[in-house]
Image (cartoon, rainbow, N blue to C red; front, side, top):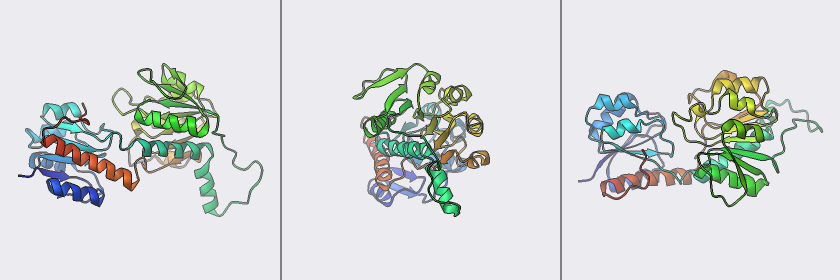
Length: 319
């Protein structure tokens, strides 16, 4: 008998077709997150659930279901802070994710934001669209030169290293980083002990740590206060790693030059105070938004389910 699997969100057609070849699939072809009632029902009715960001499988969900039928949550995405992994484990539910597939696409978005915020591209695009552009002049919208500057990577995992490599080899930037351990890299890089020490030395600070209780508000007023007034912040990790209120104050007061954000503390809500600022570039969580990458992520999530029920060792198990 085929394992009964719920695909909880709309995914690329090829991913759904592949899953249907392997499992008895129920497909919820909707963009919105699962409600708590839907999550509880799914844990009791399916053998595995393919879910993603926004589907908040917290402790209360596992408490409500009692003993779940589901034995696997196959998370579509590398980040899993929306799942209480300890509560899942206590309920006998394994959690997997999809690392690797997202690395290059997320690093590319980091570079997009780095260039956009330093060169004021979003502000310039709005000016042209408004019809108010009066033509080129020598001191129009002067931004920050990127080539040869110093980039700081907060979190030097797969994605952080991919960003640093692009900065070093593509733009001749000096690389600095803060990480729990020293990294063996194929380019020169200086390690700093704290986010504050890193922030004080760089022209662009890129946030690339995973979300966890330990990294919540890691970029707070003290880190933002340590940054140079000419420096820029880029966040492609998770929104709650940055204290959004402190960031808004720093941008308003021009204590930092600008920011480029792909994630937000309370997605999809983006504070009006943030949206009103010209010195911030805002993207709608585009980090992995290419068809090729989303198909790769989906195939990895499907293969995690296949491997689990085949009794194979899970390379992407979390927790």
